[in-house]
Structure formats: structure tokens, C-alpha cells
Length: 150
View: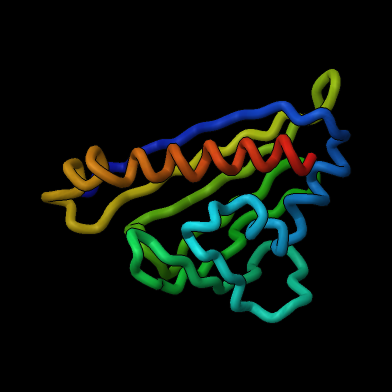
């Protein structure tokens, strides 16, 4: 049985909830939150109107290898939360919940990612050697960019 890993992050941004959620509702902003090394490119033609059931296709380079990724917006609750799930991509499971709460001085943005790796026998080694560190780098970059852009 595959091990499920959990990545959680939170950041308070000095913007109102409506402005913060509007930023995350625009799929084109995902590129600005992704490290250049991943060569992230949205393949789904614009306009992309976020809603439950939406499919978004994009391409990334992971460990130097190009790969396609398809995401389903599984849940969509404006100005509260949304969940994207990988249907096709490098992970056996990728479920990313984005949560937004209005707090004094701005908006608390929380990310909760549940993920599993393919190759369950070697998954713990691959996770420890590469994936955990790579995801930390990606989400560190994401938080830095959120702070700069919002």
C-alpha cells in the first residue's frame, strides 16, 4: 500500500480576502507562482473560468523530464476554498486543498497537499532523497512570490 505524504503551508497576506481569492481564481497566475526551472506552461486555451469540474492541462519539466499534467478542480467554494486533483501527472495521488480565511490585517492562505508516489517499494527512498526537498523548494518559492505579488 502506498504511503500518503502531507505537505502543509500557511501565509498571511496583507490583502483583503476578495483580492487574494481573485488572484488565485485566475489560472494564469499559477505560472508566476511556479519556479522557472519547472518550465510551467498552461496548455488549456484561455479564458479559463474556474469552477468545479474544470479540467486544466499544463506541461512541466520535472527532474529535467518534460511531462503533461491534468488537473481537475474537484471543489470550488469562492472566497473560501478550492481543491485541485491531479488526474494525469507524476504522482500516484495529488490532492491540493487551497483555503482562504479573512483575518485581521489580510487573508490567511493555507495549502494542504496530500500526495503519493508511484513505485511503492522505493517510494520512501525517492521521497527522502528528492521529492520532499523539491516540494519544499517549490512551496518556498510559491510563498515568496505570493508575498511579492500580493
